Image (cartoon, rainbow, N blue to C red):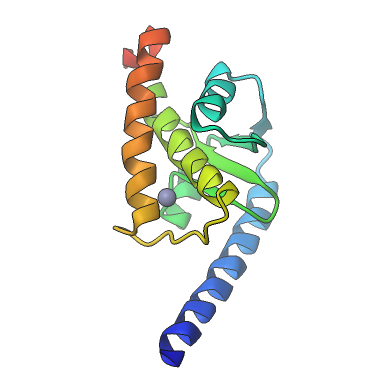
Length: 146
Ligand SMILES: [Zn+2]
């Protein structure tokens, strides 16, 4: 029991350290733009019942994502979501964004996020993101473009 808790705490610390490192790295990229203008963001926050829509940062650098082994992430510490746009299709990066927004909602529900593959939080984020994309596709046909 104690061992599991220790492992969880160590994992959390490592995750936090990693996030901080990436944020610092991330700030050195000048192609990043902060925007709250994307209509999808507001719509998705409303759909999910998110009270405080986070800031979204879009990146263009595939190498950054490659280094992180991640297309997107949510940092609860500064309440920001990072999403790689780059050469990905709109449907693809919107799905990543939707996935991270589900994590925001999970946090607002007072849950301790578990980002492990196959965890209830990850499964919810994956399935809900798919649903959001299907519904958004009815409003915005451009997501079907290559
Ligand atoms: Zn996730």
